[in-house]
Length: 472
Image (cartoon, rainbow, N blue to C red; front, side, top):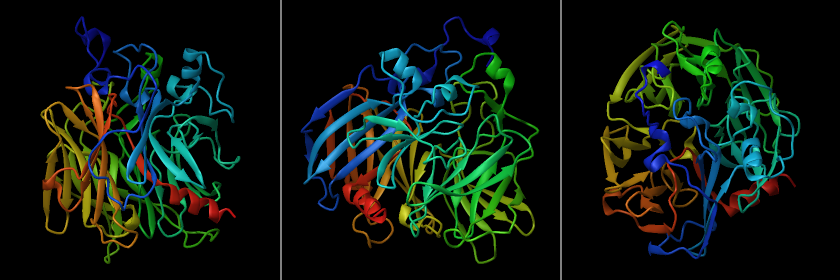
């Protein structure tokens, strides 16, 4: 999209409607609940983060990916919704706008896009090494948070991070380590990094790339860490033109999957080089999961786009995507692609306990022709179920929480934030994953609107306690 081609009054949809930023931080106590919060949801917090620009942005150059981060959290204790909090992540722009001191901590990688220079953190929330974190990517440093979502400091994982982390890490459920795939527009490589349970990077593998691609998500199998070296690439001309997100579709880019062999135990050396496997030109920002097949191939399922950021640089709305299965063959160096579903769906989640193994179920967020639904897909049947949130209501990424630690896959709860444009309020909706048709078992009512955003997690207090116990 060029300014010459713009209508006189260009409307950026990512600054409007359910995406419009909230204008203040909020604290609300003793939230009203319809239904009953499941007893299995022990004390904890449902956290998420998303873009919430604090100052007026140029609608032509603003991209949804680059808005200042705002955290949202609901605290559950003893079957009650104790509080809701929304807090801005105190990046440098927020500090200037609000007259606050800069957040302490190391300096991020220098220069480039403004959201990188200001260390804007808006993409994910995690508990790791006994701390609560907000994460972003592309040269942006992690931010440590208090239990009440106040920003404490920027971090480079005690000096072990190479300057860039990821907005979409994955935890190995066996080791408890956090894996990430990092990129930065000043690099011509992608870094695979493993953060141990003490919160330090113990392994880094740099994979050279022919361009400077966006690598938002990746996948873990038992054998590999897998990322797409894909066609959405850094474009210096967009940065010079003032666009917030200086990446666009490269029609000539030699797209490939890269399989990085994993080590078996902490500190074990790996001598096998990364493997490149050709694939058609797809962009895959979010991956449900991947696993190793007995025939040596890797099966990977992801939300996929055959064109993105060609003419529209405001957000991922240029063309609807599809849900694809990629069969990646390291022996032949080729990938077979199967379109599983052409209904637009994004923000995939699964049972994190089986990360790296074969999964049966996936949960997706869909906004198709103005209707917002939660999709559950059974890959063995194959079949899908849906739950519609209702007129004027928009759901976000649904987090799966197992009913008990040893419950079967899909035996648990789906938790998601839902923003209601008819009332300018929001809910945390809790559904049983095995009975979407029954509707919510509980709805926690938030007396303020929550903008549609990115990622989050259910973090039980016991998870933080277990992580701290590992640290001794």
